[in-house]
Image (cartoon, rainbow, N blue to C red; front, top):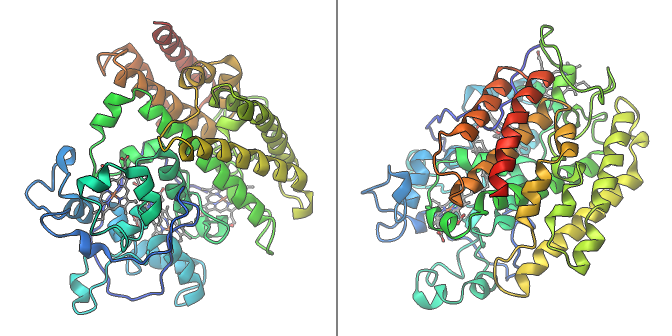
Length: 469
Ligand code: HEC
Ligand code: HEC
Ligand code: HEC
Ligand code: HEC
């Protein structure tokens, strides 16, 4: 049995341009993606953003660094989301036919939930000329009725946080908001999921990491200024991404144990422990009991190794959250491993609820820091986070299998990028960058626990030295 996990750094999208004219019932923006609780407003549809004077300039649409003014043109011709609804594509049809669901509109409706938003642009007069047949601008930026005619004025921009929440414009530059938005489709929600049946039918497994995926996305914005102003920029994307993906994954697990869903749900467990080439050795450390797949290796790095303690600059609120979550998460992982192949009743439901409430406290602390100050002050202690990430305990946990090793590589990548943005690394092809590249090459060639550790240790001491200065 062979399959390919589409790891975020290894697989660049082959963009297939092509539109269909099908009209489908479509979904609303993801709940909870926005920090604001603004009024319900309507969409104006993507075409309204396309005027040449606004986001539809065509003169430099091909240049990533200056997509400013050309966002629409650039998005339509480069971004996979613009054409993510492709019911005529071979793979799409294959998935449905393997599921035995060709022509079954209830199943197709599930696909639509993540692949087509109500903010997509369908030109009813000229279906063949439709430009966005997937995810429209307003799905990510918020329904525009209340801000379309104001958001470019200087008066509006002087009072941003208040204006965002008053008008329902998504504060997309906020890393918390951004991450929650992405995971609504890239991890899934209780209503929209990609389970093992769909994966076995041909759907790519959803193995998402925000910082890596943001790098893969053809960027229709310029973030150079933000990077320069905040050296922790990359690490902040990474950390907020970890929080959002973990929360979404645990919520999904909870939903999967209810509502008469298929169980055991193999998509919850480490793929490689059931699917791997017979020639692969050293698949994991001895913490894996043989024959029993580990749970949650992809989604729980941050909360597994005690890293949650590093996530908050000491405060009374933080003290009550930090630490406890890691313990519950560790127990949940072990309980889920015991429950593999078992009846759904054997899932440790009480622990699951404990983890969910820890995560929701965490979210409250994160959100509180924005609403009181109106600023994007995050309570994360980045320098402690970087140091803690390099601790022995963390290195031990991450060597356990290929999923957690890949996550760890992505964390090292974020630290490296942050040190580079901070000017602590001046050349992007130095010893640290080379060690990082070697780690990635090894992961791409196939995970080997022993080799992984050998490559990791010199990289770690490089990073430790850089952090000391
Ligand atoms: C939970 C949201 C979600 C649901 C539900 C969903 N998808 Fe997807 N789909 C995605 C995401 C996200 C990707 C991109 C995955 C990646 O590359 O990491 C994707 C990728 C795909 C691809 C591969 C695209 C390419 O060219 O690489 C196809 C085909 C596809 N989905 C079809 C379907 C079909 C058919 C259904 C319904 C049976 C469906 N999807 C349901 C989120 C979803
Ligand atoms: C899949 C989600 C998504 C979609 C769809 C999307 N954007 Fe964006 N957009 C983003 C993200 C993420 C950023 C970066 C925010 C940041 O980090 O500052 C961004 C940034 C921007 C910015 C720069 C904002 C600023 O303050 O610097 C503009 C302008 C913009 N988008 C316009 C558009 C237009 C026009 C469309 C439709 C053609 C569109 N976007 C579709 C996610 C999206
Ligand atoms: C409304 C659902 C939705 C949201 C929100 C969303 N995506 Fe996607 N994304 C998809 C789907 C569906 C695909 C697959 C598109 C295809 O190829 O058909 C995809 C594809 C991608 C790809 C290409 C993957 C590959 O295999 O190369 C990247 C990168 C990506 N998304 C990043 C992001 C990021 C970063 C965010 C948040 C800023 C985000 N997405 C938000 C649904 C979504
Ligand atoms: C507990 C063991 C187990 C785990 C964990 C597991 N699978 Fe499977 N997988 C199976 C079995 C058994 C089948 C064959 C029956 C079926 O199609 O459902 C299968 C079938 C498949 C197929 C279809 C293969 C074919 O030749 O048709 C793919 C692709 C696949 N799995 C991918 C994955 C991915 C990706 C993951 C991780 C997200 C995963 N599996 C996790 C046991 C597992």
